[in-house]
Every structure is written in C-alpha cells, then in structure tokens.
Amino acid sequence: MKLEIETKDGTFVAYYSTIGLAQLNFPDDQRPGKETDDAPASAQVRTWHSLTTKALKAMLAGKKITSLPPLDLTSGTDFQRQVWNGMRKINLGRTKSYSELAAAIAKPKAVRAVGGACGANPIPVLIPCHRVLAANQKLGGFSSGLPWKRKLLAREGAPLSLTSD
DNA sequence: CCACGGTGGTAGA
DNA sequence: TCTACCACCGTGG
Image 1 (cartoon, rainbow, N blue to C red):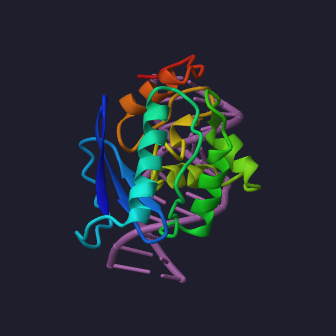
Image 2: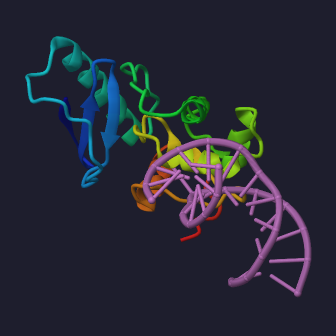
C-alpha cells in the first residue's frame, strides 16, 4: 500500500505492509517500493498513515516524535535490525559516529558494515540514520542526498563542526 | 592533502 | 563457496 505525504519540503512516499510502515521515500526518490495492490487503504493503514504523517512533520520541524506506527523491518537482516534499533536510541539533536554505533551493538569492529546497514535503512528520518556521522564529526554519506542530512541535523540543532562539503 | 591495510556484512555469481 | 563491493577508521607519508 502506497500513500503520499505532503510537506513543505516536498512529497514523501510511504509504503505499508500488513505489519506496519515498511518504507519511506524522500521526495523525488525513485527507490522501488513494495506496492502490493491498489485497494483502498484499510482503517488500520489510515491510522498508521496519520501517525507517520504527524511524526514526519514533527521531525522536519526539528521537534520530538511522540508516537510512531509499527515498523515493518522484516526486509532487513538481523544485523541490520540491530543497527537500526541502535540508532533509534540516539536522542533528538544528538549524534553518534559509525564506530560508536558499532560498539553500541557489541560489534566494535563492524564499522564499515554499520555504514552499509545505514544505507539499507528503509525508513529514513523516522529511523534517524542522519544522526550517524563519521568519526571526526565529518558528515559521511547519505544515500538519498547529503543536503537532506545537513538539513535535518540543522533543524534539530545538532552540532556540526565540520561540514566536509 | 593522499594511500593503504584491517576490518565485518552483503549481494551476486 | 569466492569475490567484489562499502555512508569507516587509524596510521603514515
């Protein structure tokens, strides 16, 4: 099930499975989604979508998220889910480096793999992959465009010493 | 600044 | 299996 979200920053696209929110795309991001059918959204999906919309707009405004729909992370591997869970613990306005995050899930040497897991994150913004920086406070990468990463961090007031354009 | 080796996980052949 | 990627990190010119 595919539904759009209009924001001041463009139109995001959310995909829902029977479990919950499965994917969120940035505006103009053509990442393929798991669209199953075009039946009308069930009452449950509409409830989820309203939560997603509210949460996304809060994030874009740099505000704290109060509630989230259930997330369908079954597309990821165990390792990727560990990483995603780990980064959901990073608070608003805080950042962690890839190596700190690797240490947080008890795999201090799996640093590069953590980077890979961030890129595989199907639900950016709500799973705050943008709060993960490289070691020296450098920006690192971002699959859907570095400008978004900068923008999100700036909106929530995260410290950005070096921007490494 | 750049080059390089050591890493762990993933996708594809 | 084996191999070639990586949103990394430290060290060393």
